[in-house]
Image 1 (cartoon, rainbow, N blue to C red):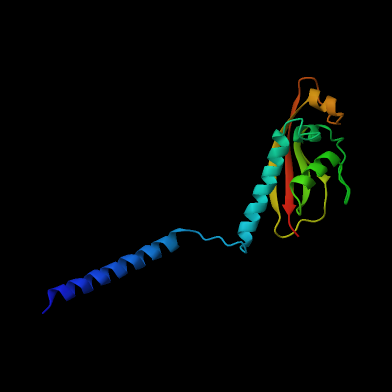
Image 2 (cartoon, one colour):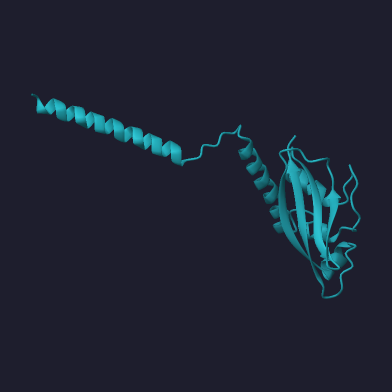
Length: 170
């Protein structure tokens, strides 16, 4: 009997089992996301929407005419009606940052102990792939006064407003 031949056969069999287990472990432990996956598209759209609100909130004054806080402060507290929005500065900035994306924007805030939600930009009914991005803005009487908004804050009063943007692709 040839011991070398048996040893080479066992080495080959062991290597084959080891390679098969390695490939199986790698394919089972990773998530493969293809561009056609609707979940990947929704995650990307949500990230783009959140980034757009963050950019508008942190943008230097020299880059755009108004940042997110100033746009919210300048709102006259009237609810928008379709197809016109009430905040043209915010709408123009979002159109620039989110090409090919439709969105609606709502403001949610506490007033007299009650939660109030007002629609400020309406671009139609959201699609089935809609995502929601949120950003909080704190308003002061000084900011509202400078922007000519209708918030009616007292001298030392602060108002926290949640900017909710529902975004979708057609």
